[in-house]
Image 1: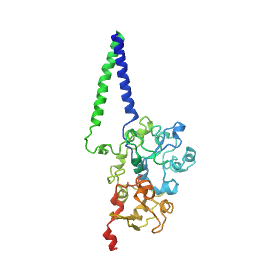
Image 2: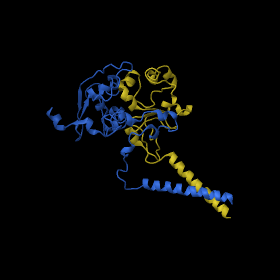
Image 3: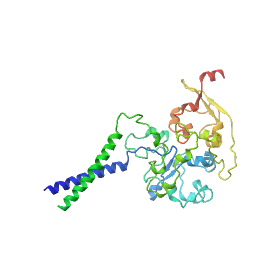
Image 4: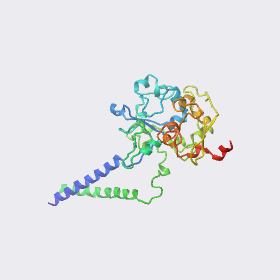
Length: 147
Length: 194
């Protein structure tokens, strides 16, 4: 008799612990990534790859906006350029520099494809994202403002 | 009997963990903390492993440069990345290329201020072409975002907040609208005297 009570208690405790851990994992954690970080998830999730994070700040230290946004034809819109790996290996968009000559080449998949799976396309910390950000349970991703 | 002992030990392990978690939640939910809606300074510019969008389980994530390391020598600001990028460029703290291949290529600078008179009590806007042409090409803004003609562009703070006009960059990657005075830089009397 006592044995089953303890068993029930133990199972209850374990469920509680699991629920607590799950709550932590699904994240009440606020978004903290860098202002201007762009997440692109046009095709990644479907293809079983992590979405791409483009760190604006890192590139801005090395190139003026004009190089990508005028010379290479990147539109000012997160996820709006329909970039895919074929275009990149043919030297378009990211591939204009990420070719093993100016910057490291495409075999370093996980340096770009580095976002948590399921992260939506967005400009991180943008004013618009903050305006529409849900109050609770937003997770790390926030609103999808730029699709 | 053996199994019940095992269960006891599980409970003994679980209870303190649950209590610890619960106490953590209790501290986090203190209603009267200072600046409860603001990000504390130590949480700004976190490394990729801790920034909430990079996957810590991805092996590439740990190789990426932590922003703080790059920002250390750069002049600070109070918004965005908390870096004054225009000043960083002026003070030669960074030397971003103007051409993809040629590190020596110099930008074509246009030094022309445009004053836009605004409604209400806010100071008029002074738009400096100089700082913008340091970074950008004319074709980035003209004619798609701004028609290059005086009085031809309707701009409102609402449209900027929604990511149009100045808001195509300001509020996404360039300094955000909370830095009012960087644009609303001219007093009404200055304009009247002009």
